[in-house]
Length: 289
Ligand SMILES: [Zn+2]
Image (cartoon, rainbow, N blue to C red):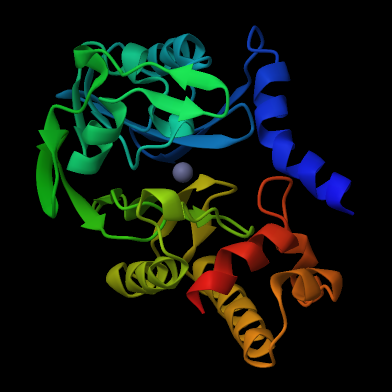
């Protein structure tokens, strides 16, 4: 059992290392005129918005996919990238900053700039600090409106959910909310408790998003398919149930190991992914309930 768990924990880095970066699939879907969802390597979301003022891009995906992503964006429009917004600090959202953000103003929460300005260690890997041109230029501590391509784009910081520096972006004309990794559509989410995330605040922030936007809004998460209001509410409801199950088990005195062995979250089996398994979701919740 231990061996299997250890293998699962290693899968994301192995997958990334072994991925064939010479052939990167990027699926493009139009959300509204000029507004596109680009699903990079069947894994991570990027959103582009182009028009007379230029192109705005939300998230830059991986460093390894950045050139292919830039080519794809330039297939959609000749308008240069004026703004790049990083929804949060993780490498699958900021890795492409050096290419996508090269000639653009990069917008992010101050903690993203702080993180990317420093050398990062991941296991044996050392990721050097980002060069100045790939670092955020415009820092959003609370919220900011951006008039661009005849839209009044609303950028809002929701603290302490997925990370400490999460931004959500709303396009009122198109009625589309891009909410980064506050949405792992259909799956247990990753909550980065080492970088300011907290599972209880994660749920509060998702609830806030549900109440903040109209019933017919479209939600683009960092991972998984595009959701409508109902999908988002159902996902939140299912996650809320897993909180109750883990809290009750903890109240009965069960350890994390016992919860895993008894598979207390078996009913939510289909929400497990190679990344956040049932077991890892129990480990995430336990210390906070
Ligand atoms: Zn993330």
